[in-house]
Amino acid sequence: MKAATRQRWISLAAGFVSLSPIGQTALASTPPAAPEAAVPARLPALPDMPSLGEVMQRDLHTGLAINGFDPVSYRLGTHPVAGRAEHELIQDRFVWRFASQANLEAFRDAPEIYMPAFGGFDPTGIANGVAVDSDPSLFAVVGSRLFLFRSADNRQRFLRETGLLAQAERRWSTVLRFVAR
Image (tube, rainbow, N blue to C red; front, top):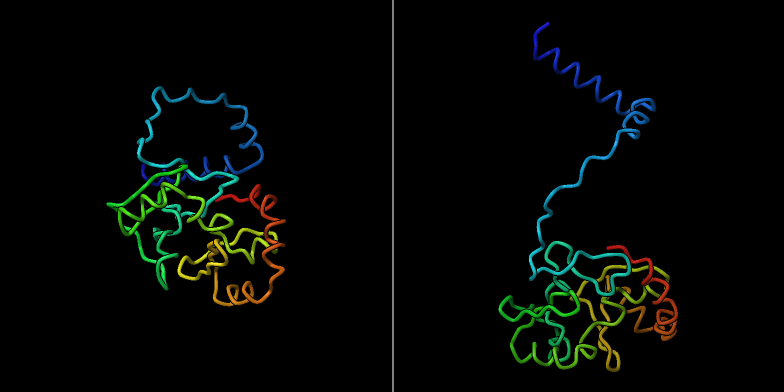
């Protein structure tokens, strides 16, 4: 038997042993390896990774809240505007982008006015007891609050059924505890 073939057979056998109950017991009784001497430090400009109880929907790859849309722009026109990297603000571990410096300053002065309700999750999902990601281009400003929706149907249903908002308000604290992003 050639050495390469023999090595492949040994690797295969080791894999089967680790998958078998006997191999798993042997592996479980192996003492843990020593911790790494140095853990690389996180870059200070990056937000922490999302965790259970995440309070704002954000893109897990970029860290951007509401997919980089300018939260102030929802109040200024008929459609939201994408924020720009040169007008970026990290607040409460979330990266917000704005179309202009004036919008950034307005948000910084009163974020509670511009942040979407229910952390940007679809309120119809919240009313049903689950956190459902939304599409920031599907929105409604009701009273002084911004709501984002997953679909046009959810938006229409929310605007049509007045009891959904009260139901979502009642369930939000429960849903928030189980949001894992």
